[in-house]
Image (cartoon, rainbow, N blue to C red; front, side, top):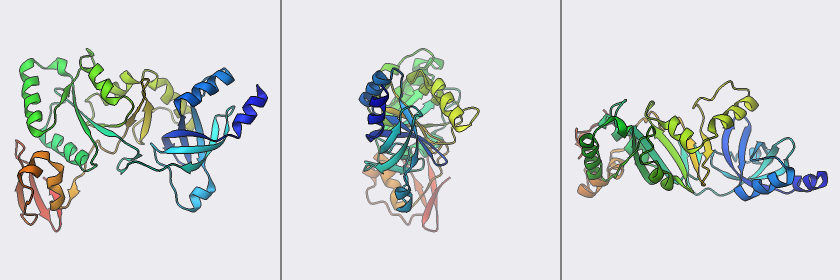
Length: 298
């Protein structure tokens, strides 16, 4: 047993960075690897707490949450390791700072809190600027009737976003949503109170236990969404709990605005960027004013 562990300690492994605090990186090992290790050591080893090799610091190469990394000299007994290499990224966002995202889940509620089209617009613009696929999801359908649900479904489909209406309380729509999340890295964004935490707790049953273990390791009393963190889905894939999209701050050039609206871009492909006021196809009207060369949402 000891010789097996010593030999495995020298072999590098590949994993995904799931959280970062200070100079420490939580690395989730790939599925088949951590299953084999668990069988050999007779205990589950899923994550390693890692530092970054000095040579990466010298060249200014910083790991991000979502990065695929190579960990050298893993210490299976101490659950420690050192990140030696960062594998090429397929995508990365600066706000929130996260790599290799496949899609964005925008989450709102049909009631409590009530939908505000202007806030919804802000989130859609922010999400569209990432050029990533968007899943538009509305929770708390159990608090509304058929008429309200149909009105919002028809309205959003007219905007170019077929919505998914779910209820975390009753479970309606969650099977369809789970299939959309499987094998993908998904950033969850939305206002407070719409059910983001409940969604993560539903799809990742051990999330509370896992957060508690990480918090004790890093000396934190309880989990708060101040940093980007990934949670592995049982069926494959990750959900990203992020603070970055929860309060979108829109600053963009007028010429960039049309690309953020599917219908607007199709209807006005040659919009005059010098106009001081723009009326967009949404209802109610979204107004923007030009301040210098930057457009501000008002």
